[in-house]
Image 1: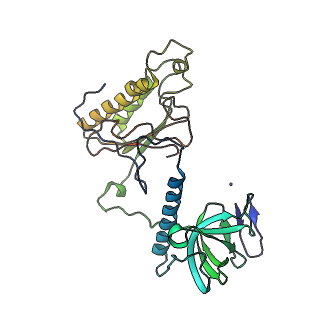
Image 2: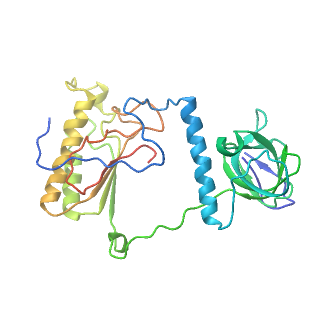
Image 3: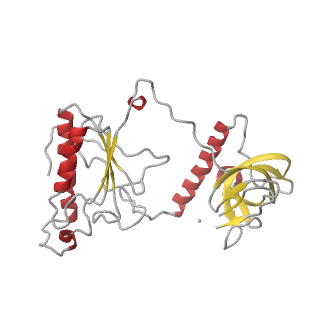
Length: 303
């Protein structure tokens, strides 16, 4: 990472279930296509990476044009022009090593620039902060077609502030309960602490409950094998110990007219979670039975 705070400051470098309720798991919305069920965590094809990068570039260009009316940032990074141009690209380094003012290049999108790169000259930019892989919008001149002399670098295009209808719950007080596992005692998998937590939620009735793993703690004596032999698989322990309890909790809550949102986030100590970080969600779509209109979100870690 390198940055400039002012024109004379130089550069800085540095990095089994029977239930009457309906079933649905609502996953967090994400831009782009949804992963197939046979997709393996942390394994990406080159084509997938290129497609994701292209979507990021197009999305950032759309955001900049929405934030600055009249701005057209669909130019090609390699196009020679004596006039000011505005382009969107990815910051890359021209060689192995740390990024500095002499090694900065801008890589354009496939749609506008065929993925070509040009050198990025930053001497006329009073303030900037760049890192490899960053998506930026650059305004400047490219007389030769080989070097883009930047006058302005737009490194962020925050979306407009979210607005909720006046009658929605967002305009009132919201309460969120957050609990972190493990949800069983160190020498058993009876999940008595989870029972106590769910009973407390039925009593206090928060608008949402965020449960952070581990749910099947790899450090638990029973799970680790230090205590009595575990006759169930880790997945069965999770199903009977956690999932079934959540379904019973949601069914009782529905009977009381209470519809909380529930979010499940895995932990690196979860015996049923993928041995990778970031971690994918613990549960597939439709794994938890929930009343209609009650979101049960199986989130990734970090969420």
